[in-house]
Image (tube, rainbow, N blue to C red):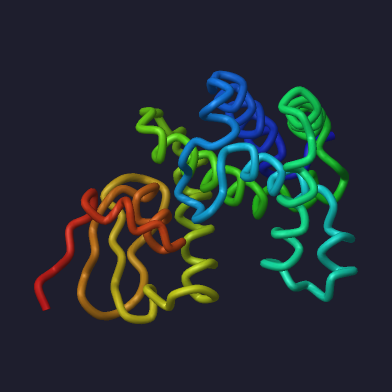
Length: 195
């Protein structure tokens, strides 16, 4: 039995692992990502940890501190050990991940784009993944930067509907989601209304 969005979560995790496995050792260890201070190996470590919510709870839901701990610990692992753990994470999601697949899909999809975009690698984003990136951006905007409170975002592709008030920002659902999630590197793909 599959939970809602579980198939797409599994597929996106597999696509992310295919990307990670295609990286050179230098790209894997120290290549750029859109996550400040994180290489692709660090993004992988973070994503694996999303199947371990108890770790975040034990740390008082201090997400940034827990992420820093996860990344620090994973830097002691070899590429082989980390990618083997990633392959298991992709192939066999935890029960909590399966139940919350609709939410976690956005996280893995945004981080997949973090790696691909920073390395200049193109990718066709499936419509359900673009929609998940847009949803994730809306959620993160409320917590991180309040962009949605100051702007009206209008997707030009399927995956989202216009939201917010203020000067209009137009672009693909994927690019808008990335921008709402604080990825300023996508701003040149967006159209900002004159204020």
